[in-house]
Image 1 (tube, one colour):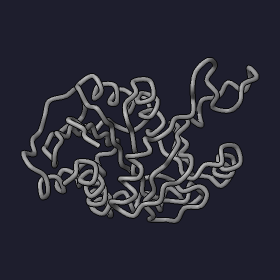
Image 2: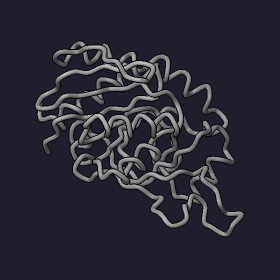
Image 3: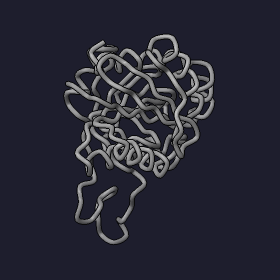
Length: 232
């Protein structure tokens, strides 16, 4: 793999700020850059230039950031963040989802399947080579489907619905939106996710604890994956 410019999308400031410190400790020419987003930085890593944006939470923010980075010349997009655990994953585990879909896209009232988008692809795949690279770099498992929607999943009933309907392993609020842009633009994409909660009735408390107190572990693990991609 050889990428001249890599774009990284981060949704949450509690994930972005620790990564800034990690980059300052292990990358070259770390600098703040001007973009339309909340915060952004650039740095050199191995054979690639890296552009990181803090886009804000949710699908619209993530898709906007993805297209901005593609239009800025990035030839691969990466993402990291926290995810709710659904089936076959454990609290604190790092995973690399293989597929992505939007669980809150719903035209079932018109006779379509849940998440089905008429006349277009609606289940997106991560880049296989990038998945293998991430998995090798940080020993994360490549899992099945990550479902994505503009809602924090925090009830047992919602969790069971996502498992039974989509056979999903994890849930989040950005990945499918990024994957959709990458699919349309033929841009390789991969995401590293850490399971922060069980997407159940106790999810809010568990998520807050990991989001506030353990950002460094996520940042350092993602940096290992990034260095694997840039051949450091």
